[in-house]
Length: 342
Image: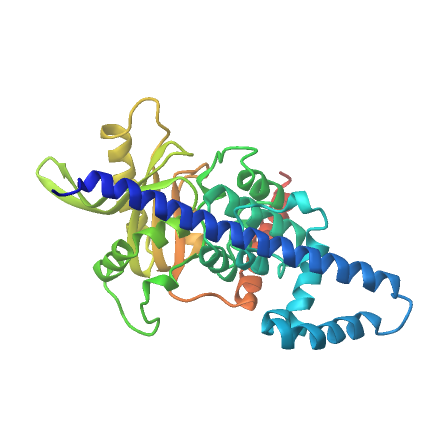
């Protein structure tokens, strides 16, 4: 006599679910414990705030007492984090049950409140793991989105207070593709980069942003006997449209833009349903001249986007330099408007 496989799977599922709940419960209790420790440290510190160096003395002394008993999880550095945790989240009801301590450890290190709120909203909405959250913070996601939007717009989309009305509200420039594992000093063909993206599709979708799903690779289209192949096709449920990606491992040219425009036109005329929005085309390129892109496309263009890719995580200084460039561009455009009397 043999047990049914279906019966065994039911029991296995119960055990797996119970283990998962137990781990989650333990982590929730741990987060609450750290918050409570941070609270009493902060309150005790406030009582002696008039004494110079009391806060430093308090945490160092507490670490000397706790670390020998409970290990390095209660070191001076960790106790400082607990205090910072409470200061960042002074109301216990504001804690999210789905966030682990590793989530919070990343979040409390973010100084800017708008930036912190953005990552909290995105983590909650997208159910990011602690590793995914850390990766998004390290890749400067917030700053990259700010390059083409203001803080209110970025936060509104993150909190789902509004749906994105423009592709630029969710598509980043640059895109950070360090997860592909490609060496930046090497030369690559488009097909190499495309293959790496397919291999790491889940990470690429995370980098692409909210609402993306994969549709096709090397999509073949026929135009009166001529064949063309579109590198990658996605669909975005928030924007309700197809999103075509063409990969260029060299500097972008106006011919590349023309080719992508043809693919976008094809999808709009033969693939798009009446209820769907116009197709968006993204040129994922190693380098670009923004002036060439701007002059090649119509002034009211909202469907073709050129986005640089980087095969490594940017430094904070690199992002600051990019932000400065964007500010200078806006200032130059304002100056031209004033000169022309617009």
